[in-house]
Image 1 (tube, helix red, strand yellow):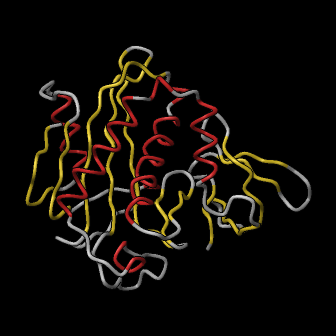
Image 2: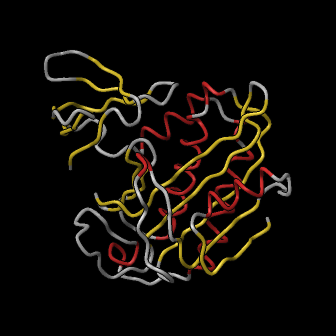
Image 3: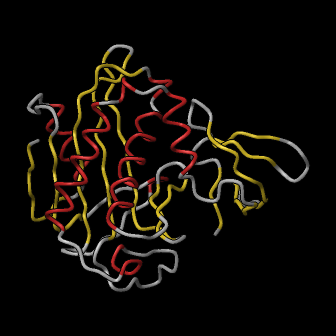
Amino acid sequence: MNIIKLNATDSTNTYLAVLAKDGALQDEVVVVTNHQEKGRGQRDAIWQSQSFKSLTFSVFKRLDGVAPQQQFVISMTVSIAIVTYLQKQMATAIQIKWPNDIMAEGKKCGGILIENQLRGTTIKATIIGVGLNVNEEHFKNLPQATSLFLVSGGKFDLELMLLEITSEIFTALNQLNNRTFSETRLRYEQLLFKKGVRSNFKRSDGTEFSGIITGVDPMGRLEMDLPDGKSLKFQNKEIEMVY
């Protein structure tokens, strides 16, 4: 594992993408920064982080070849790896909000942005950006945000956590082909936030509705039962949980 440390950068994902385009990347490279000026999240959102209190990093991993229609297994694998690591560090409820937000005691403490690289008809490499709130003590105008410190009461060594959490991610990705999709999906669904609980959602057009999350399908679509008895599947960005 090779770690590149930057004082500041627009985006660690973008930084790695440029290196990958130039063909200068070996396998298992990590880029971490103290200050990310234009961190990106899901739905084109900006990921907010506090310098020297958050972990903001990206990893580059070569893959043996994953079919594009199976790319959600990468997202599930990385999400599970991060939650598994955090569960070892603290006795609190850590879950995954579909598709790959990290939740601690019902509030968001981390996000993942995955950008896969295709060669021919398979995914040959992936860049995974992670933003994790670690030692923050407060959040301004973000009532649904939290940090590992706020839920555990303890401060964490950022450098040690970076080494341990990236090792967990790389180990999981190296074992990607040793697990069946059903095994990965079962573990992912066990960690899924609000699974089996009636919750409120908002469609992209602003209309709201309620439903019960039942799981995810092989394409990564969220499976849900509605009050009228219908079962629907939703793509990422089609709906947003209201909580």
